[in-house]
Image (cartoon, rainbow, N blue to C red; front, side):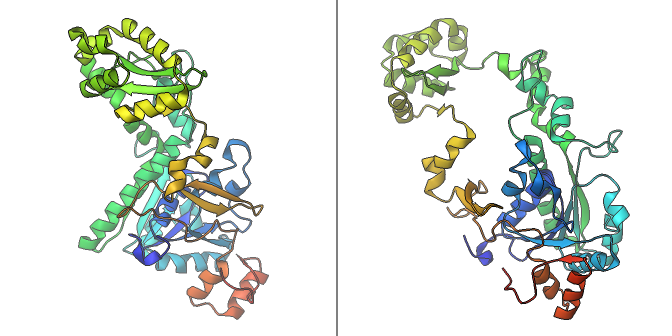
Length: 403
């Protein structure tokens, strides 16, 4: 899907004032779906570009398919240029501290007066309530929302192994944006929508809250949970490699027993129901451990696949670069890193008539599209050159081709 006209959000204009993960993820999803997303960055570029350690991949993962406009927003000229861009926009996204956009003159109340149809999406730590003034992080809300408790050991809360709340919170922001765009079709008016980290965490752990409501018992962390199924564990193959296997229905149990010639289990009436099998886990698991431990990993997985049993090798993120499924049909998108090397990163995990949204714009350098954006807003080359010379606009020389 390389052409914008075939993408669902072609024609939607988004202006993004974001950094880190939550905001860029929301803008990145819209961009992958075909929206024209312009990332407004500080003159020196988004600080996220320069993060190291576990933050080194943030910019690279969530900023493809966007234009970069680098401005000094504190200057009257830079502010005016940004406002002209917003006047033509359908959506603005921001994920800065409460009040930061208002102080710059880009709060919703001010922008709504200029552009009544604007959808303004704020991505925050908390929705309305006693905590709304607080600054939050993904890890903060994982801790206070119960996710870290459910992920770790009983006495050792542990954050999930990705920025799951930032990313999911950004996704909820996209859902709100698309809903507001749909509502605008009938009302003609935009609105202010908000998504947050804390409430996203609460939504994700809601299943455990519901579990307690249903059972009357406080759920233990997933690391020490009581399994709902008899075979739902990590097992070792003959080489000592690990494979997760889940037999989660009576039909799968029968298929499992047939594939691995477990005729005594298949014929045991006490194991015919899931409840009976869970009660007999101490009898079933030693047998399964011994069986799987006698089989090479590839043979074990081939037989599980043949029987239709859910299974998974225990991979690291690095293993996904060479995963045959991800590499088969556009599951990985090639982007160019700051050093000129290339990396293949996950595409948006959706298909449209069997086709995956791919790459239309490579990762932008800071200010790469500043001149392109300024020209599209009607500025003359002389005006643009003056803005560049005065340090208001960061861009390439005017005679350079626009990319």
